[in-house]
Image 1 (cartoon, rainbow over the protein chains, first blue to last red):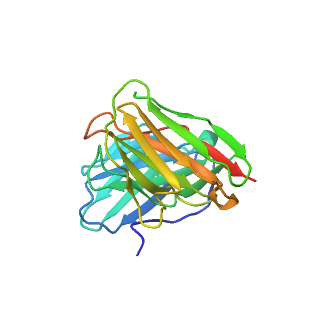
Image 2 (image 1 turned 120 degrees about the vertical axis):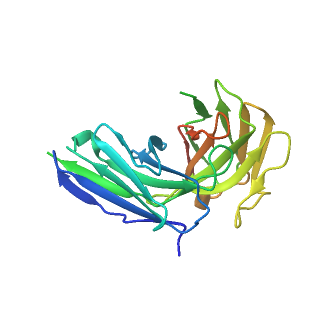
Image 3 (image 1 turned 180 degrees about the vertical axis):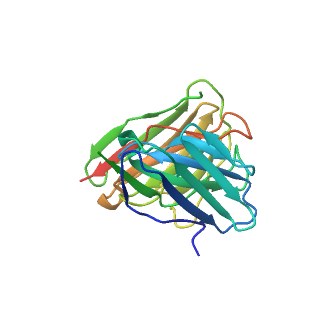
Length: 111
Length: 115
C-alpha cells in the first residue's frame, strides 16, 4: 500500500462548481498534513495546512479524519485559476522531517 | 514568508558531465534541507536529507556516490549529479524549514535535461 494515495483525476469541472479531493495515508504516526498546489513545471506551493478540527480559507476547506486516516479538500466556486495539480502531503512531524507526497490530483476548471 | 532559491533553474548537459545544483535559504538558517526529484507525471520523491555539518542521509535506491550532497553552511546545500545520463533528466527540488514546527518552503526547482 502506498504511503499517501490520491485519485489522480483529472477532474474537469465548469467554473463555479464545487469539487472535492480525497486522500488517504498509511502511516498512523503522521502528525502534520498539508495540501500543496503545483502548477505545471513549477515547484509545489503550500495551499493550506490541515488541522484536526478542520479549517477553511476562503473558498477552500480542508478536513482531517485521523481515525480513518483520511484528508479532504473542498473547493467552492471554482475559478479558472484553480486549475493545477493538488498534492496531499503528510509528515511524521513538521519542521525537520521530510514530507511524503501523494501523486496529486489534477484539476481542470473549464469556462 | 521564508524564501528558498535554487540555481540554476534549468540546465542542459551532455551525457557524462557533472551538474551542480545549489539550494539556498535566503532569510533564515536551515540545519536540514531536503532534496526531491520529480519525473514527468510522477509525485515528488525524496532523494536525501541534507544535514549541515554532517553527511547526508540517502533514501533507498539513491546512489550516494552519484548524487553528492554538501551542506557546508546553514543557508546552502548543493546537489551534484555526477556523470549524468539521460535517465537522470528530471525536475530537482529542494526544501527547507525555518524552524521545527513550520511547514517547509520549496525552491523553484531545477530542470535537468541530459542529452
